[in-house]
Length: 337
Image (tube, rainbow, N blue to C red; front, side, top):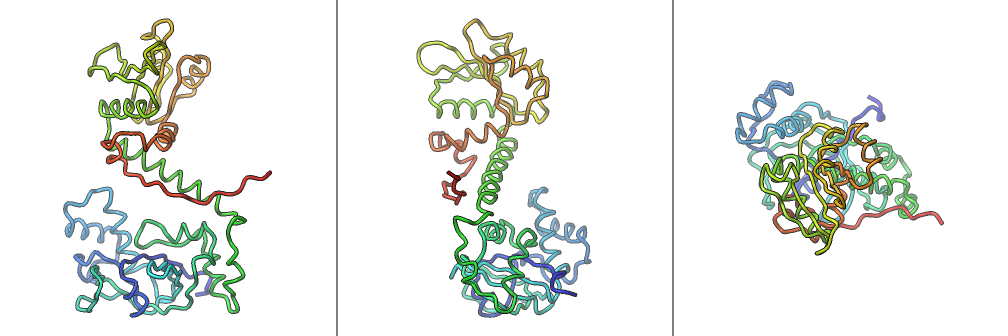
């Protein structure tokens, strides 16, 4: 198989010494036992996974079982491996040098024991600065084992004879992947917020969340009793004086229709403003209605997530625990003058 046809795998570990000093790559899930005894199909791995971990969330089963299947059967001798080590902040590139093995009796100083193993021959060790920001983002994927696809060309270039780390060591403010990486990180955070809200704050629970967000934005809010006040979920004021803002909150997955906005308008008195908040989006007619009705503002799912990001620090601890986020700084491209 030509080098260009070989797969490139990314992998993470808590035991750098096992990987670098013993020339191994490994993954967890030791409870699965010797996976060579499992029929080499994804369905068989999912079935075994459910038997071993009966309390696992159903949504997590395909991903975890898929990683185990790939490690045992899809990964082949001769495939390349990219391992970003945390102990020295290096990017290590190697080649798979042996078949899958279940090694239950090896000694380790690490608190984490990895019995699912393969031999690896390390070829190159580079500082992280050699690679573009986009490649580093892909290498740092959340999964334990994953395919490197978007930036495989950088991995292959680093294996070329005569490659010099200094040739790309100045990757920085001129790195054209920085903007895409920053956008991907922000989008993945928005997706996380919306998935968490949809999963944990359905129905009336979302009303309390929106009221807390409005308070973080400087509004005084009152949440209506369930099922009361003509469908108005929250009443908000910027201060002690009018205008009054009537808020409707919908957590259903379907798009909001024009009739739903008209219902909000019907509950408003002269001088009121309206706010409609949904985790989904608006139909074409509903969006046209909003454009023609400036006293009503519609907030869809992504816009709601953007507000959460902006006012997160001011929100109550209760909702910060439901949506755990950490402030980080990410590189962004310089604006052209």
